[in-house]
Length: 284
Image 1 (cartoon, rainbow, N blue to C red):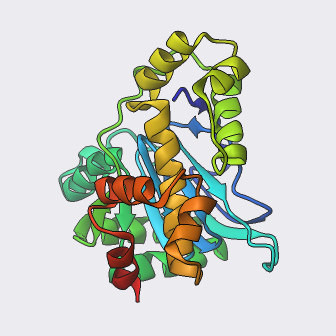
Image 2 (cartoon, rainbow, N blue to C red):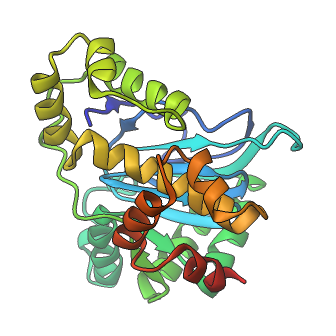
């Protein structure tokens, strides 16, 4: 998918930026930026797209994104909720502390971690909790103290083994041409209609492409077919219902847009490597 280049807002007197967002949603534009991003979800749930990975997110999730990994968060706001999401977001350029900083002998382990972050990383366990505390302290601190907390976060992340990759190493070389409107039209249409039967002709027509051109375009940019993408969106919606509702599996399959239960079971087993009942047991 061709993402939009995003210029991260940064005050001229700041080397990096941390913010505390309380918003109706996290934004919907598929984008990338040279700054690395540390993203901690305080409140909210929905689907996130990182590289070629599509998966659910929920509160208390922390991810570290390397430079130029395309990403977006699509929020699901339950009707009975307060209708907002909340997160802490830290952006920093790899060269923010000087081009030589990451090539010092003392920062070798940090450089290894930042190279690993090209796949996107889930930050887990005690490491996540410690980093979260430093992010909170950073929000409330003066300028020099912010730098000290940033170094503390670097120190923790460079030593931890409590992380796991999110996607494959996602090269951004294919993003020379930006087509934000086209891809966001595809996104928005899919999220609005994934519960219904979607014909590829409809989606291709929205972005003024022939079916053949659309399929080739989407496969080239997303590393998967449009229907594989649509199936992942439906399955991740179903996973959220399996965990957070008491609906019968047949009802969940229908609500997620699958034509019948056997079709739902087949795709679920392929993607999740388990049955829906086994998936529920993992979280019970």
